[in-house]
Image 1 (cartoon, rainbow, N blue to C red):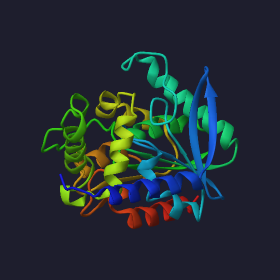
Image 2 (tube, one colour):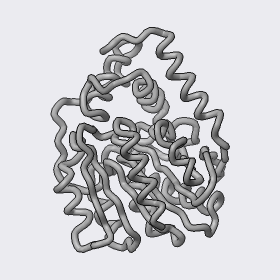
Image 3 (cartoon, rainbow, N blue to C red):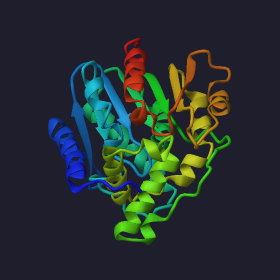
Image 4 (spheres, rainbow, N blue to C red):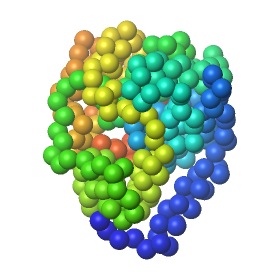
Length: 286
């Protein structure tokens, strides 16, 4: 693990604090629970759904560029970061439906009947693709590094159990996982990515792995009739991009896909400029 000075890490925290302070915060309530949404910019609504072991911070390099063109809304899903969790066991099947209901309620309260675009990353791709048919005013969908395709994965190194250790060992485990799972290499880790990954993981109470690895996205998208853009980093370990894309686009001429060179799973962070331009172009077609 590369050592960063306290000043460098504090600078990363300050950047996240600046982004958070620049957002408009909304509280969506359901069943006595509060789910926090953040908003930037104005224009057509664009909802960003973060990944598993994630938070709104998965979009730290995207919200400001996108907010120059759209009204960007980024929820923390139930059981993530500063949103409340549900009062059910981590693997209770009802948790999934309640998660979708809470997000649908957030869209209804904050967007209403206005047209919107939807973006999901990783586990958030499964969420977005399953939620999409339930949103009558959805215009377009984009899925980045999405799970739920049910095809082969390409993990090369095991992930470490960071919950089982503390202190420096925990930081080393989180950095190891960031380098081998989220990014294209350990060399791609920077202080901001490390702080986002650490803070998001430590505040996650939702267990999403089993959902990301099944086929529910492919099944949900059978009833989806809006244009879909699918993007994977060329080095994404969670999929073989061409194979996953084939499973999700077959028979649908309004679905496109692309693979981004020299990028891993967290493609919108590692190749932020390219993904921002791609999303702006895709959603401005609505």
